[in-house]
Amino acid sequence: MKSVTKLVVAVLPLLLIIGCGSKEVKEDDAASTGENVAIEGGVSVGDATGGTRLDDDREAESKTKTDADADADTQGEGGDSGAIADEQQDLLAERKIYFDFDRSEILGDYKDMLKAHANYLVSNPSASVIIEGNADERGTREYNMALGERRAYSVLQFLTMQGVSKSQLSTVSFGEERPDVEGHDESAWKWNRRAVLVYSE
Image 1 (tube, rainbow, N blue to C red):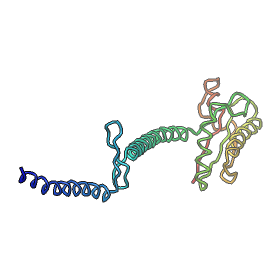
Image 2 (cartoon, rainbow, N blue to C red):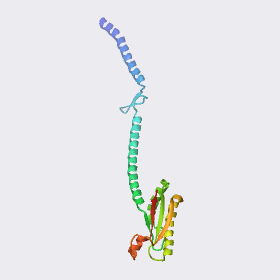
Image 3 (cartoon, helix red, strand yellow):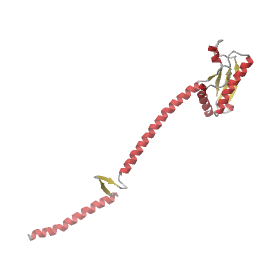
Image 4 (tube, rainbow, N blue to C red):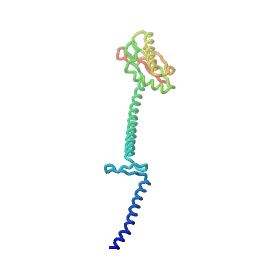
């Protein structure tokens, strides 16, 4: 019995030393990583400088999602701007503005087209345009020359109101002398009441 007691007395301090040493090692490990670990609802949440926190995960996830959304928006804008560029090219391909009988006011149908030409001219200051005014065959030669001039000037005014420099624009009237379509009825006349944009670089 005495030998057992001696053994317990001898082993007990050793167990205490081992137990304390083990605890110190764990604390030292935690201190070396800078972690203070807490258990919340059975989930370990690291609040450490070197570890990954749940907040950091959320921020990273949020940033990834935002970046992905931004990329999608950029691609969408690229697609839209491609469609817009095509539409602008189509409008720039149109060069004729038609008028009602004996009128020089620009009809609403041609305003988008003229705005596209205005944007092009503003972006390309070296480009210039001659605006040719025309009339159908009805009326005197002198009257039709004046009507053609009014039509050309009406287009010039519209373009300058969109910011085009007057130095890029000039007008000329051909009156009834350059019909687009030969004929002596409305089916021909409606194509001859026009102004034409002629570019020169």
